[in-house]
Amino acid sequence: MSAPAAPPPDAPSASPLVWRDDGLPQSALYGDVYFSSADGLAETRAVFLAGCGLPAAWRGRDRFVIGELGFGTGLNIAALLDLWRREKTPQSKQGGQRLHVFSIEAHPITRDEAARALAVWPELGEAAQVLLDHWPGRARGFHRIDLPGFDATFDLAVMDVEDALAAWDGAADAWFLDGFSPALNPAMWREAVLAAVAARSAPGARAATFTVAGAVRRGLAAAGFQVDKRPGFGRKKERLEAVAPGVATAPPRPRRLAVVGGGIAGAAMARAARAEGLAVTVFDDDQAPASGNPAALVTPALDAGGGPRAALPAQAFARAVALYAQLPQAVIARGVLKLPVGPRDGERHAAVAAQDLFEPGAMALPDPEAVAARLGEPAAGPALDMVDALVVEPARVIEAWRGSAIAARVARLARENGVWRLFDPDDRLLAEAEAVVLAGGADLARLWPAAPIRPVRGQATWTDRPAPAPAAFGAYAVPTRDGVLFGATHDRGDVATEAREADDRRNLQTLAKGLPGLAARLADAPLRGRAAVRATTADHLPLAGAVPGAPDGLFVLGGLGGRGFCLAPLLAEHLTARILALPSPLPRPLSDLLEPSRFPSRAAPGAV
Image 1 (cartoon, rainbow, N blue to C red):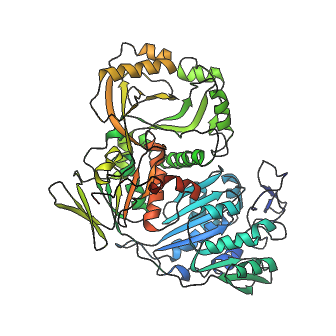
Image 2 (image 1 turned 180 degrees about the horizontal axis):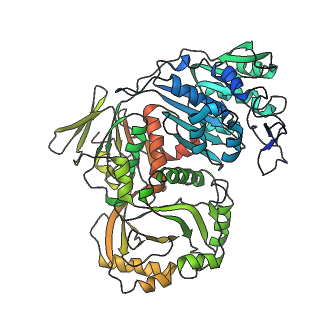
Image 3 (image 1 turned 30 degrees about the vertical axis):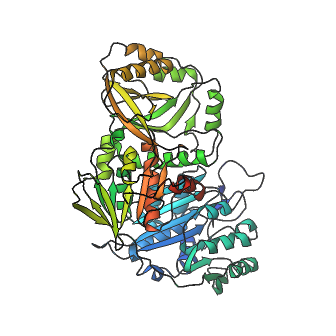
């Protein structure tokens, strides 16, 4: 079984489980076991896999979505993955099947606790191991998890069950209803919860559970499911199977995607779309140079007040760090110090460190001596150590994710018979695709004249002198492969990209305000500058969604400002989900922040 919908008022902050004398994990919050003492794996296979008609239910489907209440030790998902890899349709030139799993867990256990629980069933082998190797974190929110080798994607919602169901935008083809016993955790089985399950179900979806409690039967029936009792497992005489009204369908999905823009937005888009089986063509005319510096920071925008505007960058940051871990050759440095720039920054740093939006220990408050040792000089006040933050080499990230790109300028788009056609400046056909993503940064307005983009010129400066630990202080100073990069200027409305000596001097003056010792050491160093134009929006939030007013199949990923390497990886996965009508890795309150339609349309999309 799994974790409850919400903890009692006196719930402990330590592990949600204890180990019984017989070796079984038991909930410390509700006193119920996580799985059957007879044979948890056999129970999972009988109650949930067979109860949902698997594997027959996914045959003939290119995508299959499973929802679960709740995740617990991961046993159900490990058993599902084992069955999926053995029984799914093999990969082919047309692409194979993909599995999408969404699970909810209010009180996640650690990876080591899960490993101990799952060790009882060595026959789960690689299915259990891939789950343990990519065990999700404990921060509040959604966690997107890769499961390499299984053609599967896993999203875990660490939050209350009703909040999670309201936030998820997917439609499950099958449900594992695996909360703790209704007698011990009635909150998980409320009629409102079961109605929310029904609202997140595809036509013909099947649901299975171990319990036959009357409240559960009535709740499922009231939600529209046809409910039937079936022979139970072990000492339980009966269990439930339920079927939602309607007939399962497999809607047609795009097969080809064209991405206009070759910077980090385009590269992240190519990676995310290819992972879902799309054939991707990237067009890069080298007009999006904001990703071209020798180093880039991967840090979240911090908001001490919490809420969606704090949760979005926190969740994007966690996903970016996980994906860059798969590209160790691109990582220059780990750990970034956030230095104070105002008298109240110490309080703000403490508030951020206390937030549950980040993993435990990911935001730390180091003592002044430790900060001074890392910087080579004292800080002006209390610093925040962003332990998981990174400095990456943009060129290596883009090379790994984007792949080869067509060096051509897309001058015009036209939609004909359900297909987008892309033309060059001489009106020659470049490509055809069912979907197009505009990811050209500040160049977005060329193909989408109504794009709500504000250009901001930024010049960064670097030299080959040794660098201290990465630091941010309104500006930043970070190591490159052979020196230090610092800056950057911020000039609204300026779209010129030539490097200016005056801006290098401005950057040095700004550096002196945050790291005066480093600035003094660089005073006589030869400096090199590079300018680019960032794309921002009026509310300083990105754009990730359908282009308003355009024909179907035209999307945008942009407005990332100076945080493209933090935001783009997860936002590209979100946009891929939108393109393919799949569950987003973002909760609704966060994805709503990204909708391009939030800005009033100033004009019809002229070129499209």
